[in-house]
Amino acid sequence: MAKTATKSKRLRRGGTLMMLAVLLMGSAAVRLGLEAGPAIAREVASLKEPGIEEPAHKGEPQRESMPTSAELQTMLAAFQEREQALAAREAEIQDRMKALEIADQAIDRKLAALEQAEEKLRATLALADGATEEDVTRLTSVYEQMKPKEAAALFEEMDPAFAAGFLARMQPEAAAGIMAGLSPEAAYTISVVLAGRNGAVPKE
Image 1 (cartoon, rainbow, N blue to C red):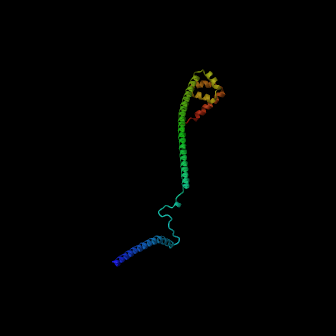
Image 2 (image 1 turned 45 degrees about the vertical axis):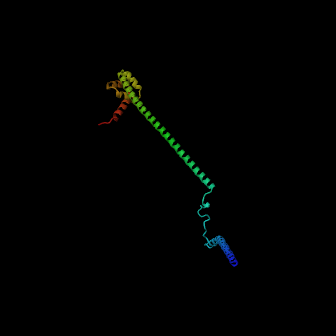
Image 3 (image 1 turned 120 degrees about the vertical axis):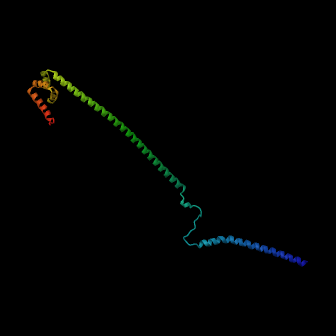
């Protein structure tokens, strides 16, 4: 019985020792794996070809290519300045368009006023021509009704061309009586003017 108990104790101690040995070996293996992993990675990285570099931050945007806050502020200020310049230019163009529109309206009003003034002037000239013709006709009638000697005294003082114009309008009898009362010099000059007018008349 004593031998059997001793043998059981030995077996228990041996099993326990075996388990402890296994645990120690497993722990050593884990430590070896944890320490060997980074070392192997470093060795692999050192074996890569020179000139080929891994990106510093995989999956992350490179900060060197992104503008800084100061650069963004400068760009924003430039955009705002450009926008203000365009707005000022647009306002200036609109002001010029309004000024041109006002000038066109003023020109239209002046042209309309000139047309009205021209129409009034034409009407006035027509009235003047009619009044002049009427006055000359009336005065011619007055000279015809005057005595030849009295009319001849007036025609003696007139400009020859003016006197010839009246004599050309008169009845031939009245014109002959006035011509008879004129001095030879005045009668000759008026006759020359009348002959020149008649000579300018187109002939068949």
